[in-house]
Length: 230
Image 1 (tube, rainbow, N blue to C red):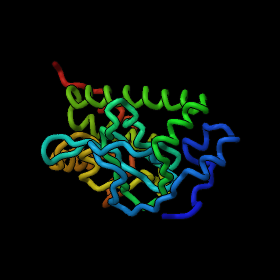
Image 2: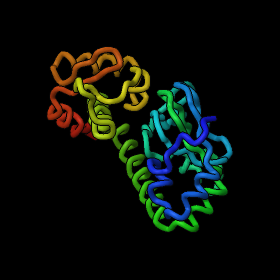
Image 3: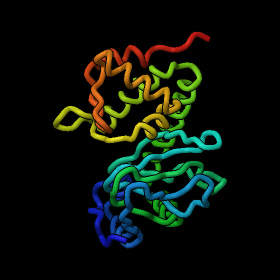
Image 4: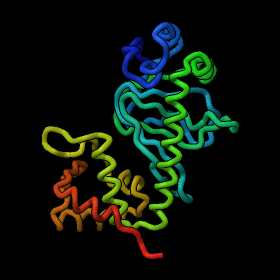
């Protein structure tokens, strides 16, 4: 446990609740230091609270077949996760795992629900996030059904660039294992490996270990716009 690490300014909850409510947040939050690979919650677990990312990056994923996972999205500083468990089933429908060390602000579900009742702006923002998540999930399912693997890889790289930007060297400001990238793409590891090599040979990207640089964004956009004939 990390004491008072969060600055009460950066996370989704603090940004959208009433200023007079911040002392209540300070009292009820728990700052947790997480290690790379540490799981915040697991799919099917009873909902106990909401997790707000103060630092680090978290992958939100779901079981996909017997021994595979599908990464639905990545959460970074300022983002919220665990909110998909607010439905009537009171279980988390997804899992969340840190892919790098960081600080997580945790609030119990009872306090979070009380906060929503009092902070209407926060409730409206959460509804918007839930709507965006639903639209993105529908888009992902459509792409899995109708977009070739190369198009899905291209779309995944463009999405990562839009969310995380690039560092001073021009590489995506997030480092992923090839397995995580395959899971985010919804492709087998072997297919991801083959497509990445093809994109490198075509001059569309540069890949060095876990670092990836997009060289020809237009080419990736063209690939992401292709769908299989049905």
